[in-house]
Length: 324
Length: 254
Image (cartoon, rainbow over all chains, first blue to last red; front, top):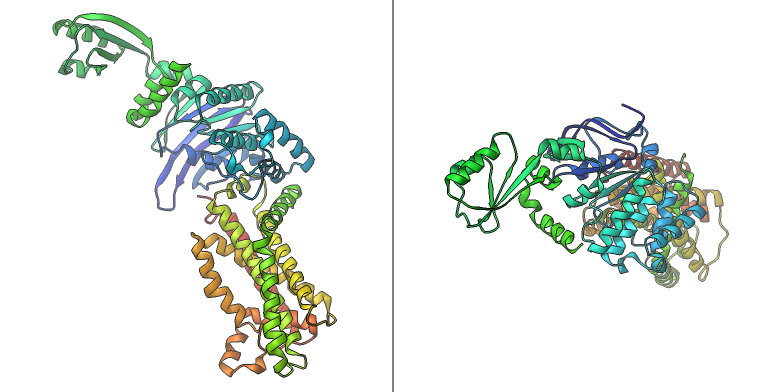
């Protein structure tokens, strides 16, 4: 373990009470100042890991450290170092928006006056100052999401954990939040992000970990991970549509898309010449040929096989990117 | 206590919670105590003989104060914890550097403040009907503080065990209320048959009611030292159990 590990998880095992094994001996480290993306399909173990880091879940085996402090033995220290933005809105309904921030800062041991000053600064920054005396239930979904982030920052943590921070947020706010997270990271804050939007992780994160069925299946610097796992992809546009893939094309891992006119396969030694030969044998005419670098999406799908569960999200992200 | 600021903040939040619904928490018991005192103590009580050397009205008032003290502290802790689990804002507290002892104590003090305010309200109402000097203020304080903390601990346990709002009211209706009504609030041991005497003597609330009654009017059906011991054992056992459950995260952490 080195001093610059913001988070160190070693041989972590977690069973739920129904004996469901949620985390199967996972280990990874996140360096200080990193923008870390923790990806995985629903139920893979992302939120369980976050809950263990923040004190919302127990675990059965392993060690979890935050800046060298054990999350069980030194929980007071580790909790001061972490700010959590949970997936669901979980505000105290008896408090006004400003009081939510002031009390939360108080629980972290920060004097009331400092809490008030910080709360007002954060409310200003997130465009919520005018609403400070209101009940949070009167806020829009996007405003509530901003309030969650403001609450996580009230004690100025060194690590910000974002559990699906832009879920249900409109495009404009999503981009503003992305910029805000980038700025926070640039100012030295370590960010631990889980997201369903692969593009979000691709745009923001420097390092990616992929968890699947409670196991870490990939962990690397983002570009290296994409390069090593997915490499390049070849896209062949045909002049005439192909009704179905031949056995040989299927064997090479070719997929057929866009009304039978687009063939897509991963570039590997021996595959490209083989596919070209088969296209020639089938008498197909090529309209255009493109070789492109794989995306995080390709890598994710390859690692988890969870294309279907992300299809809707991916489509919406593509639309978002198009609109941009 | 290492996080005093955090502890004070949580106590403040607990007090603000019940004050923000003052009309549901403090006012109803004060109003209904007026009705109890007027009907049972003032109207019916006038036709009763003296109980243990005092008028039935004087005998009744400490019992009523203890009843509302128990209901207030129990109700505050159970509803506060249950609602925060149900709406999940308990997570706002669980992710902070507050220790489990600090969390439990803050919930208990919230219950204590609410129940003492309620008890004070009931006492002020009673002054409309009867006035008597307090026999021993230290004994009164002892019973008010430790019974409140003990029943706030019961409230925390119920708040943890309950999965639905209905469970809270079932605990109240089928456990707490019968114990209160058979605990000597309205009757002395001399007024009930032998079977009820045995049942009453096995009820911890009987010692709480009589302890407070002794502190207020100098009259008790049980030995005051026994009353004090029962209250202390009751409080310390339940308090320790609450801290233990918070520490292991029972129904708080997954």
